[in-house]
Image (spheres, rainbow, N blue to C red):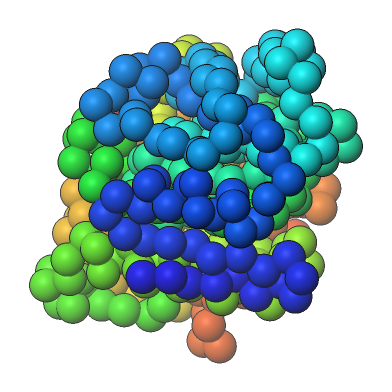
Length: 349
């Protein structure tokens, strides 16, 4: 399956296919014919996988970065940029991110900033990367103040989603990707009965098509694209607080699932939806094996503070919420209502 992100001269295809990684050489030949060096950016654990046989058809180097969210730091950015400079990559050359969302975020940010921009290809190898992180041109790293607060919109030459590598994913990584799939399923207005009979490959296709369509209409999050942040206001706050304990104590998709369950409850508290919509959300999340309650160890005051500093907020508490006319950004939500819903939402210790 090929899905095109329509951005005029910068349009590109997202290929969703078993063994899609083997299309890299042809992609570079078509889109970056003057390239002489291709830098594959990946993590040490992925570089040893049996499927790590990516061939670019050019002089090829492999640069490894830390595993998981630990890659998304200024230190990692500096080390990667220095390595690119030492290998004398030019503006004609190509950076390829091979890995999960953290790797593709970092590789994309490096491509956007090295020599003020070099060509980029993404080969996402995790489920969350294939349905979300590697598509749409968002790149970034974390700051102490929050997740993804430094970054750039930088579109790749193409995205190769190799579904065959997903069989090697640990269960927790698979579940993390399902959080983003749940978001797309809910945004598309679908129910749990259809979900129960839909294959993973079709779930990936639905998510990729939805994101490509939205990004084609709103590349830089000026309107419709912001709806793809459904569930992310609380999710990013949870991730920020979790980073204090361990970079991977809470995966992105796990946080998004909690954020989705909270968002629909907040929408109900504001009179935007009824109990049926809450039940639809919970049923979809439970069908995918995702959490539908907030772990009780998170401090409510800290969560509210973190949500107010989210990069998508405008110095107030803003959420994407369901409503009678569909999903919309709701700004300046009363803090007392948010606080009450967070307390009500917390699960047992």
